[in-house]
Image (cartoon, rainbow, N blue to C red; front, side, top):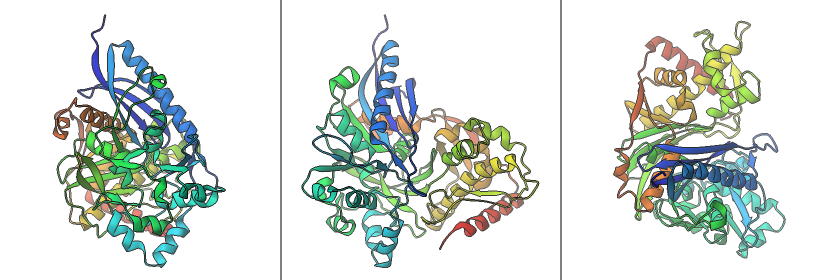
Amino acid sequence: MFKTRKALLALDQGTTSSRAIVFSTSGEIIAEAQREFEQIYPSPGWVEHDPEVIWATVLATAREALKKAEKKGWSVQAIGLTNQRETTIVWDRATGQPVHNAIVWQDRRTASVCAALRKAGRAETVVSRTGLVLDPYFSATKIAWILDHVDGARERAAHGELAFGTVDSWLVWRLTGGAVHATDATNASRTSLYNIAEGRWDEDLLELFDVPAALLPEVKDCAGDFGTTQADLLGRALPITGVAGDQQAAAIGQACFRPGEMKSTYGTGAFLLLNTGKEMVRSRTRLLATIAYRIAGETTYALEGSVLSAGSTVQWLRDGLGLLSQASEISALAEGADPESGVYLVPAFTGLGAPWWDADARGAILGLTRGAGRAEIAQAAIDSTAHQTCDLLDAMAGDGVTTKTLRVDGGMARNDTILQRLADLTDIEVVRPKNTETTAWGAAFLAGLGAGLFRKLEDGRAIWKADREFKPGCDAGHRARMRAGWQDAVGRVRTG
């Protein structure tokens, strides 16, 4: 017989898949399960998910991972939840049914609304209170769009019959059978409705974006009581004791607990997060001030740069162009590329994120000649992620922040070729941890903290271990030519 050992379940609900991972309290992966799901593109620049499919894939993976862990003699003590941020769901409080598909963070349908608000001089109000630029990326204009385009939704929302949530709130609601309508401070900070300096939903912003307060969830700390799952869902009732948006969870998983510590996650998009401590840094270069985490009522802030397309660029080569049968083939294909081909891929499929914030920009492959082929396009796709990271680091330097080391994680971080190219083009050391599932581990760690299995955040530092360091190996001339070519390419797709 196995001796029962304590474990934590992380539910990692991402943009293209839902995953469940059971961790030991020392960060070891015990069991995992994953389900991909369909991306819905109703119009150019629009991206949706079916909330019921999100729920079904989360539930299925949770059950599968739990079953595997229990067979090995592990007992899950608590659940931590992490999620794609900004993605917006509105549902009926009585039935629990969504009134519309989820509008995904990548979606740009409200670009004209944001442009009108900027023209009306309202951008500074949003930035000063939320730390965010005025952009369709965030939840507020998505909520208003649903209320205005679903028959009767606005009236029902005003009467308290509907609920809004980012994906974490939706899952907490479903897991608890509708008993808890809550979010955490990190996800709240991505809505454009939450005053991150004062720690509250902001009445003026609700009025600005025309969002009824009756829709909103309670905002909680990242580690604490988010209710208990219904017993019939997972075989027994389990407490939910940790919640954080995916990028903040990754920073926690990477043990970025001190001001100046920085990580970059490479998943569907790429997101660079720098801990700024108790100070909310006002960016001069259109980066975002956001909440890194809130523990025991105390808020820690971060500076963030957001790249909208990273792993999704490789996915497009696979699914859109048919250049790959599996994403992992990209390195082998790129090996045959001419290093001086001058081919650039700007993956502005849903616009450009930081520091450009150009919702109307669209993707392009530039510099093609008859000598260019599949290998050059594959190399350009790899380079696009490195170049976009360079853009974020340059913006941070403009805010007076520099680094010699970048901790990386996410699916793309498993690829040595991509990480070496990242080190070459950024000209800084790139460090991959032994556990690249840092987003899920961050959620699990928060759950352990909320359940009393850890005493303090710093307990996570001893668990983090480096796997490999990638040092820059590119000559300065090549790097300068590559960067100049990229900047020219971006200039060609920008609309403003």
